[in-house]
Image (cartoon, rainbow, N blue to C red; front, side, top):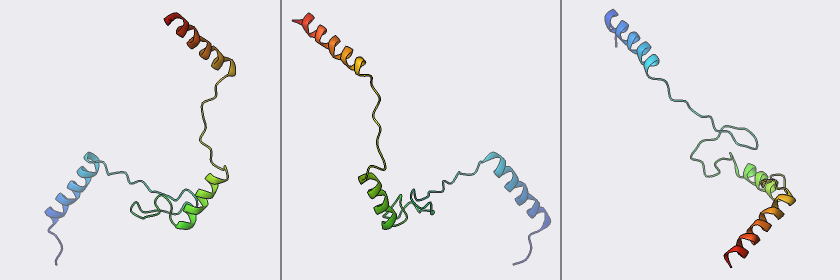
Length: 94
C-alpha cells in the first residue's frame, strides 16, 4: 500500500473536518458500578453492578435500612381536613 495522492488526502481531511462539525459524535455514557465505581458493560448479568459481591453489598444496604424510599411529608392537620371534607361530601349525597 502506497501513500494516497495529495488531492485525495486533502479531500479526506476536509471530509473529516466537515463531518465532525456537521455530525456531532454520539455521546457515550460510561456506566459505573454504584458500589465500587468500576466501569460496567451493559450486557453483563450483574448489571448495574460489576460483580455478585457488589450486588450482595447493595442488597445488604437495602435490608439494613441504609437505603430508604421516601414518602411525601404530610401535615397531620391537613390529613384530618382532607378526611373531614370527604365526610361532608358523603353527607350531602345522602
